[in-house]
Length: 318
Image 1 (spheres, helix red, strand yellow):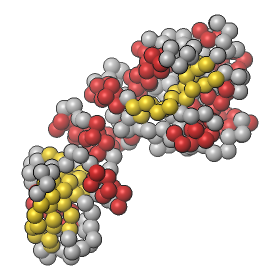
Image 2 (image 1 turned 30 degrees about the vertical axis):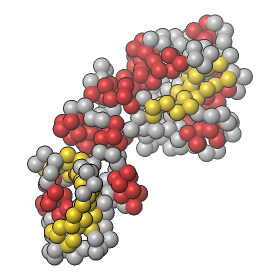
Image 3 (image 1 turned 180 degrees about the vertical axis):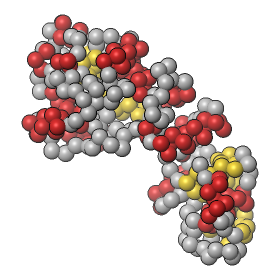
Image 4 (image 1 turned 45 degrees about the vertical axis):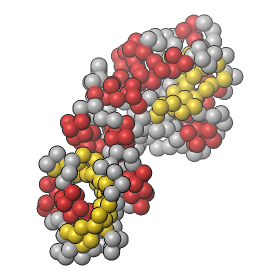
C-alpha cells in the first residue's frame, strides 16, 4: 500500500507522514513550491528517510492568488484555495505513483479559518478528493475516510489532536524519535503584512504579475514613483540575486564607495533611483557621487548625483 503526502517542512506534516509510515505503508512526500513558500527538502529527506519530491505550482497558483474562490485570510493568503490546489495536484498524481490516498498534517482547529470542520471538508470537495484525504493527527475526530472503509488503514492509528496548542505534537515527536523540527512560525510569505502590502502594490501596477516579478518581491527595498518601480539590495546575497534577475531595465551601483546594487524593473526615472541608491551606500551625503548605470541592451555609462533625503525616500517606499 502506498500513499502520497503533502510535505510542508513543519512538524505537523512530518508527524503525519511518520505515523502512517510506522504502520508499514509506503509514503511519498511531495513538497509543492510557489514564490511564497518552499518547503525544506533537505530537512525532509533527512528526517523522513525518503526523498521529498518537489513540484512547482506557481503558474496555477497565480490564478488562484488573483481571484480566490474562498477569499483571503488576514492578509493576502488564500489558504483554503491553496490547500485545495495542492490536494487536487496530489489526487491527480495518485495513478502516476500507484498510490491510493493522500495524507496531510492538518490539525482540526489549529488555524481557525482554514482548518475548521467546514474548511477541511470544503478543501476536499473543491479538489475533487472527497474521502481520500487522511489527516492522521486529527483523524479520530473526523468522519471515516475511504482508506478506513476499505481497510487500508485502521482508525486506531489516528489521533484526536485539536486546537492551537502543540503540547501533544511535541510529545508525539519525542515518542517517534524526532529531535529536530521546525517552529510553526515563518511559513508562507502571504501571511506577512508587509509582504502582502508589496504584493497588492505589484498587482495594482501589473495586473497579473510574472513568476520573476513575484520572486523579486522577496528581496530588497522596493520603491515606486511616477510609474517607476525600482529595487535596492540590502546585503551581499540580495545584491547577487538582483544581478542575476532577468527582468531589469537598468542596473546601477556606486563606483568609488561600497554600496548596494539597484535595478529598475519598470519606468525610466533613473535619477530618483540612483539618488536613493546613494543614500544606502557608504558615500558621503550632500556630495556628488559617481554611479555606473547598465542598460539591459548592454550599453553602460557613468553619471553623478547626490543622495535623496530620508523624508523623500519614505514617500516612495513600497
